[in-house]
Amino acid sequence: MELFEQESISFPTSYEEILKRIKSIDPIKYGSSRNYINGAVSYLSPYISRGVISTKLVFEEIIQRGHPTGRVQKIIQELAWRDYWQQVWISKGDAIDKDLKHQQAPVNNSAIPEAIFHGKTGIKAIDSAIAEFYETGYLHNHVRMYIASITCNIGKSHWKLPAQWMYYYLLDADWASNALSWQWVAGANANKKYIANQENINKYCFTNQKNTFLDVEYEDILQLKMPEVLKNTPQIELTTPLPSSQDIKIDNSLPTIIYNFYNLDPLWKKQDKVNRILLLEPSHFKKFPVSSKTIQFTLQLAKENINGIQIFVGEFDKLVSAHEIKKIYFKEHPTSIHYNGIEEPRDWMFNVKGYYNSFFSFWKKCQKELVY
Image (cartoon, rainbow, N blue to C red; front, side, top):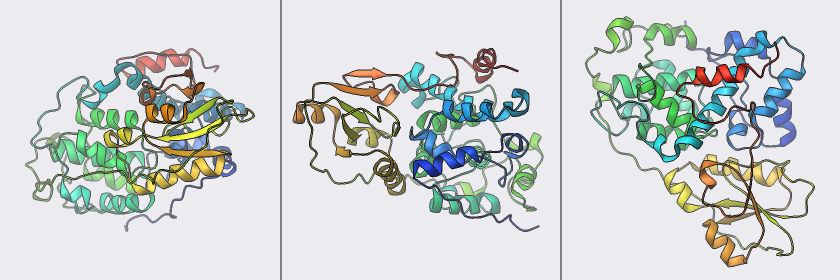
């Protein structure tokens, strides 16, 4: 059986097209097929991560169709995972940048296997997915887990730099989802590691490959000697190509609302007469670097959907002082805690807030708000 071929993935940037994508979700088919690389996934994650739409908006669209909740619970649960990771980030802050629950072990390097970086592992499904990843900024969630497992649990790389590499190229770059999922796979944010062998990859990626370093039984996989292909682990440098600074004009008789990498909501105060500024802080992108493709996607989402938006490349304090801005609104997010002004809440699917030690303890609380 040959490697499964599917249509090239694209991510339109107009709000109307994004809404069409929401309406096109088949939530029942999603539940039965999402783990397969050709599954009926939503392709909405870049828009949720950039704050163009919320998990709540998607959730309400699904519920309004009148499906019995039990039949669409899987997609609701997957949306809830995103909110869960965000709640962990809010509660733990920079602690998610390190091993959160357990020290990852064993670890023999803090880099990334060159074979992962270049998509040359010898596992066809993985190498094909990485090549497509560089082209599109998209990776299927199951493939993300495969890559993390190979890197951390077979290659014994610490999760941090590989997670930064993946975040760098993802259009749906969300540090909470990405960092905490990598830790979950590596056993730093879970009580056991996630592993997958070649049989599992073949099943969900429609390959029939044999004799790879993963072509072993599950009970043997964590005892494998380091495959030669994963031994070369050079350091990589990730830098963000921010656009050049532009002159902006502020009408100080009006409030100013601040958008950023995690908030591009085109409906936010849409009818209000305000200054609209997309703030791109170099300090943020030094800590959380992203690729040129991701930056261009972000800029296009902003320019196409938010009338009158201006781009400011610089720090928050510099923006405020240089333009003597008095009244500022911004949305709550862990990356905007240093902003000064009037903080407004994000939209959440449920009223469940705070830190929960596991997703399923969080989910049990959420379920109480569902109508079955």
